[in-house]
Length: 372
Image (cartoon, rainbow, N blue to C red; front, side):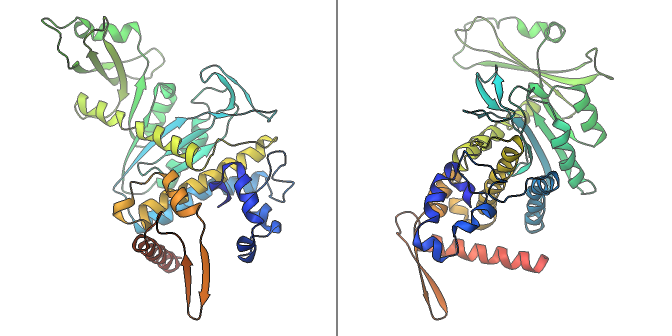
């Protein structure tokens, strides 16, 4: 819960309030919740950050996702991998200047499924390449889904255009669409499409698609490449993009499938805005690794709430809205014989919605108890 509060300052203040103290949120529990001031360390607060515990914490997100999918089975698996930036402002271990982002930062790597759940994440030094350690993130996820009767897909941007990754995905039975940086050889293959359309330019872009086989020198075999060429009114040169893929669907549908990976960037923004997972202000790198995993668990809990608990009418809520209206909100709890009453303002959450949420949580707890 603490990770729903920006850099834990609000949570530290709330711990001192009488209503939280009455619920058992005493100062002695701060360490167990990961609550600390930025100049401290998790170990100083009693949180064990040894490699074994960190490994178990990293696997916890996947375990939670598996439990949720027991109630809501999936027909296919779509994995989106992307890196992000977590700016740093002190002497944190592992921080470095990243020229791409133009700041001093960490450079974490995330793997999402199509529902927005973080399947796996890894904190990395600030100056590493976007695709570094992709195996450490992707392999545990692939291993969890082995043996399941699912069609499996993978998407990533041009930073992950790596023949080792192609070969790995093909060996594991994944269908993939990965952005491919352009070069002279690829442009020669679509040379007829690079000629400006004849006639008066239209206000709407003129878009052409093509698919062809291509083999770079570093590849062990030829692979399908899909090209998209867009001519925009008023622009001298076309916009050209390439995607390497083993999908057999038409070129236009391959591009449409790849473009859907933009949702991963939105999920990263939600993690930054709602649970503040960029606030990695401990000095030791291992402490910040633990903090990132705690933030990811908080993010996944919020995303599970949207999928399995919230009524259909409000599942479009962002995690920021969810935090402000359901998590970070004051209420008075009145206990009477045989019932508990939550006294809260209906401006944020009407009583019918709150009742539906409590019923959803009850169903989820019952299903978890039965399956457990």
